[in-house]
Length: 256
Image (cartoon, rainbow, N blue to C red; front, side, top):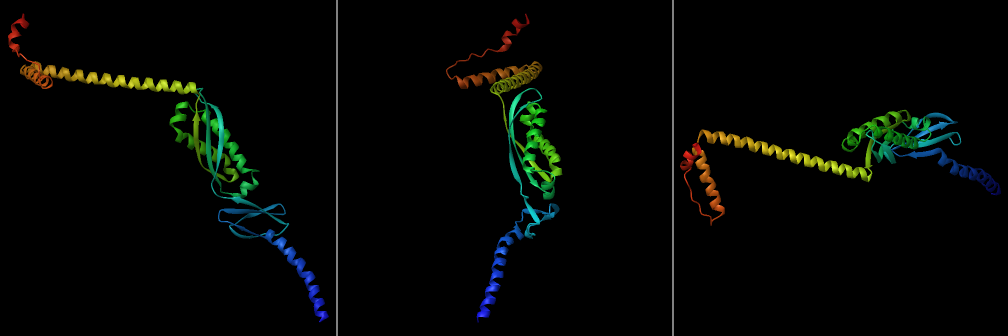
C-alpha cells in the first residue's frame, strides 16, 4: 500500500508540472480567428503564410502571429488649408473608406498601413483640390471624389489596401468670398429676370404687329375690338356711361 502511494506521489510530481505547463502553453498554441480575420504567421522571423478563419495551431516560442481585420474601416481626413486653381482659399475635410485585401502585404510591405493611408489621403486631398477651380469644387463633387479614390487606391495597392470610396465632407469658404458669391448669384438672377422680361416684350410686340396687319386687312375687326373693349369696361365699372360714336364719322377728317 505504501509503495502504491509512493508511485502515485511520484506520478503526481510529473503530472502537475505538465498540467501547469500545458495551461500556459495552450493559449499560445491554439488561436481562433473570426470570419473577417486573418493571421499572418512568422516562424523564427520567416514569413509562412496567412491563415484563417477558424482554429489556428502555433508552435510556442517559434511561431508569431499578426492578426489582421478585413472589414471596411473609415478614417477622417483632418481639415486641410488649400488654395484653389483660381486663387480662392478654402478649408476642406474628407472621409476615406478602405479595407485590407492582402493581409501579407499589409504586414510585410508597410509598417503601419492605417497611418500610411491617412497621410496619403491628406496629401492627395491638398494636391487634387488645389488643381480644381472653386466652381468645380462646389458643383462637381462626384467627379472630384472619383479622382481622389483612384489616386489614393493606386498608391495603396502595393500595401494590400483597397480604397473603396473617398467623400469630401465640407468646403469652408471665407466670409468675404461668401458675400461675393451671394452678390454674384443675385446679379445672375436679375440678369435672367431682365432677359425673360425682354423676351416677353418682344413676343408681345410680334403679336401686336400681327394683330395690326390683320386689322388693316379687315377694318371691321377694329370695330369688333372696340365693342369688346366696351363690354369689358362695362362689366367692371357699372356706373360708367358710354356714348358710342361710329368711327366712319371721323374718316373724312383723318383723310385730310
